[in-house]
Structures are given as C-alpha cells and as structure tokens.
Amino acid sequence: MASNADFVQYIADQCSDAGEIMTKKMFGDYGIYCNGKIFGLICDDHFYLKPTKAAHALLREEELRRPYEGAKEYFYIADVDDRDYLSMLVRETCKALPESKKRKK
Image (tube, rainbow, N blue to C red; front, side, top):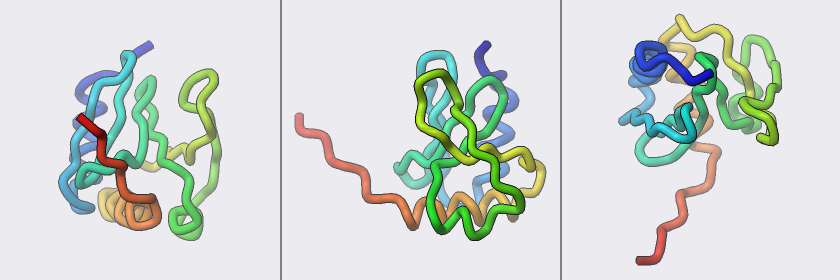
C-alpha cells in the first residue's frame, strides 16, 4: 500500500518550519528531506524519523518500527498534528545527521 499524496503534503507542511522541505517518491512511498538532507520516510501513510540521540531526547513517546520489510528501525511518529513539535524534531535530527555525500559525475 502506498502513501496518499495528501498525507505526504500534510507531513511536509507540518515540518516546514524546520527548513526547506522536499519529498521524493521512492518505490511507491516517499523520502522526506530538509535543506537537501534526508531525515525520514513516509510509508503507508505513516511518518518515520531517522533515529538520533538528539531526537530521542525530545520524543514524547519512543516507538521504533521498520517502515518496510528489511529496513532499519526508525522512530515512528504518531503525533503528526503538532507542527511546532514536528519542526523541532526535524531540525534537531538534521543537525545530528552527517552531511550528504556529494555524488561524482
């Protein structure tokens, strides 16, 4: 089951105070990026955040799930209606993630 485009846009809008948010369709679901850095996934209308110590300290409740079979565990974020909370999680997660590697052409 793929994610609904309206749900994907809702998550992107909710995270938008963290920076420039972009989504990319990947295998029927979506990767979500902030300022060019991937920080999460949207799969089957669920939002998953890459696990970092920074986000862990801010989570209201911690639940690790695999977004799809064979994936690493991500933080499952059930509370997607609090825009300030999501933006804060995204901002702090992105600070903790390594810089994207430049691809050679």
